[in-house]
Amino acid sequence: MGRVTETRSGFQSIKQFGEALLFQLGRDIPVHSGARRRFQSDLARRLPHNTFKPWQKACLRRFRPLLCAGLTAASAILPASAQQQAAKLKVVTTFSILRDFAGNVGGDRVEVTTLVGSNGDVHVYTPTTGDAEMIRNARLVVINGLGLEGWLPRLVKSSGSNATVAVATHGIVPRKVTVGEILSRDRGAGSVDPHGWQSVANAKVYVANIRDAMVAADPADAATYKANASAYLAKLEALDHDVRQALASIPVQRRMVISTHDAFGYFAAAYDITFVAPEGVSTETEPSARDIATIITQIKKEKIPAVFLENVSDPRLMRQIASETGAAIGGTLYSDSLTDEKGEAPSYIEMVRHNIRTIASALAN
Image (tube, rainbow, N blue to C red):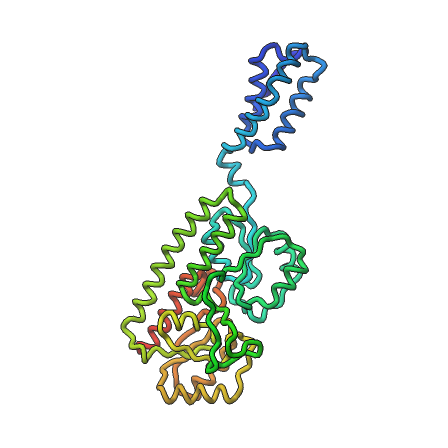
């Protein structure tokens, strides 16, 4: 890179003064307040003020506002390499499904980390000191709400974070646990089912809330977040259509599914399927012998063809029920967590597609 040369007596003309400014503006680096200070320091170091003639000093005083304005304007047209290096919005999500939503909305303008990773159980998660550090460094924390993350308030408080907390379920009509359902220790009849994402229509609400939270946290990239969200919402619309099509040929009276815990209530309501689970809406629940006996009787009476495992639950109970009823193991459903990239459900869309293929196949047979 060349250097601007000057004589011992300083600038000989306004032309040389302008060349020095253009040299600074032409560098392939972001121009911001720090660059402004570096330019002034560089100028002072190269051209000591005591070498200026009176008319040159007058020019410096007169053109200083113009220099600052020029540097400010230059900051608005950064080269692509500088834009790519700009700080990304740091987002923390509580579990892997929210991580996928946030990643689709934020794209390459966000850095998303999650507390409960792939195949993890958000119901029984125990936070670590590393989680507090992640939240402390975040600008946006995306949570499910509806009581899913009971361990979260204490974690956020202990982290000392000033991050914005966005509740992804804001605006969703909560599903209430009914008296006929098997209840968890902390969720009696009338309490809220937190698994809102199981309805694709609700998933679109999640995405809209995450989009709005990112726009508020990072207005400079609002157009990117809005465009990404619109593209992803179109994919979710197509997914909802495909789920309905997959079930269309199966009579409603045959749409009965036995799963491990009651995570599919919103899915059931959206697509007219009956789900029965020996565990309640939380995997913390230990089903009683009476609960298990009731389900076994129901399977035999209604000739339910298959029971399903879940990736976040111990499979032994469902294998026992299958053994005692003669029902087949219809496969594994993914409820509260995605798999890693090599698994069957590494994204929300792939999770829903896998689940409906597995259910439709078992019920059709």
